[in-house]
Length: 88
Image (cartoon, rainbow, N blue to C red):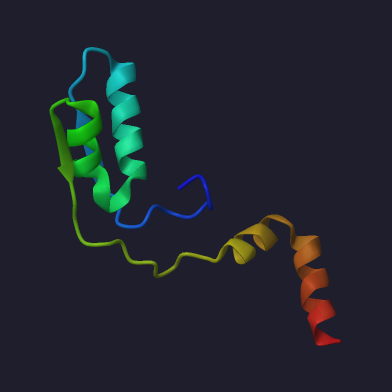
């Protein structure tokens, strides 16, 4: 989800839309993915195009680092400063 920067809640595994052009199909599929649990409803009401939505069990978050950990892994000097500062 581009608004908060976190994954879309209840997003489908994949969305395929039949449209006259690849651009239009890609646009509808992307917008549907951003709707999360409401992807099918969105496509029925807004696009009017034939579509296929694949859903599955939610992915495991095991092994996913927090945004803070990911940021500090790219900035090791600041990570060290953060760790040293937290000891004071």
